[in-house]
Length: 315
Ligand code: TXA
Ligand code: MG
Image (cartoon, rainbow, N blue to C red; front, side, top):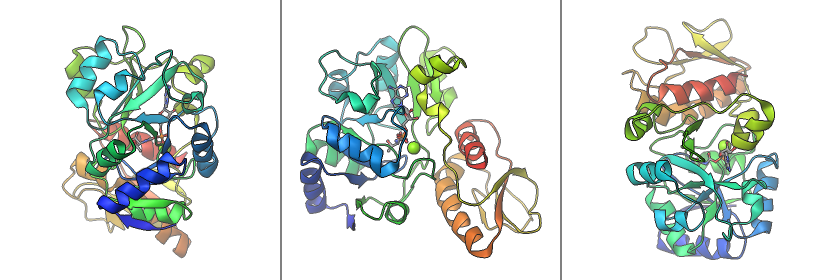
């Protein structure tokens, strides 16, 4: 409905709305989230409806600190280690739900696990403390569209939602998700925290979730959903634009580019620019009747998550 600069009054007003069961879009350091009270089934149902999100795909529950997270989920040694090292930050932990936890079952789509994250963004922290309850917040885009990395993206895609404007997201990719359900930590989603940093912290390799469909539906339901699609076609690993293509560059190049994700070839910079560039290139391509092409991104560090999002955008 409107964009509000994230000042004290706006944060207090949004906290009141959330307590009444309304939805609010909030900035985090990864992407903007469509937030609702995690204890309120009607608010959660409104999130699924607003995003047209498949009901099998559960939401991430955001809390202000690890103590609040422990009241909701059971933390094993892996989860404790990762939370101590990386929270607040771009990391989500999937853990077993506490039997008596206040989170509405719809938040975890009926699973006996729950995804938890402590965001670092100042506005998200202030809002969580003002509401004083956990907030579910999927990325603030209609299901299967590009994630929003600034407030204008949200306003364009979800015009009926109030948005707290906290500026452009510093990381620009959704959180990395780790399953901490037994002794084997699972790599459920590549995101804003590189796999190598997580493996260095745990001093062990992360395992992939099993491919088998029923198991994947239980452990990694998000992998079943097609995601992050721009409306224009997208070609990967391009060396140059073909006729009728807008080129998205990476690194030093003499090819004419619509935009370069990072002229210096810096993967953190490319991650922060990714959704912004895809949103604006998509708009330009639709206006000119062209399609998109993107240069190859190296598969190291945050490149894994960037390539994951690009592959889904091209699918
Ligand atoms: O950075 C982020 O994580 C952003 C910001 C707003 O916090 N949120 C976000 O939410 O990306 P969303 O809904 O777009 O993605 C949540 C992912 C989905 O892939 C979902 O399948 C997975 O988390 N997920 C949620 N609960 C789960 C659970 N209990 N077990 C396994 N995966 C889960
Ligand atoms: Mg999403």
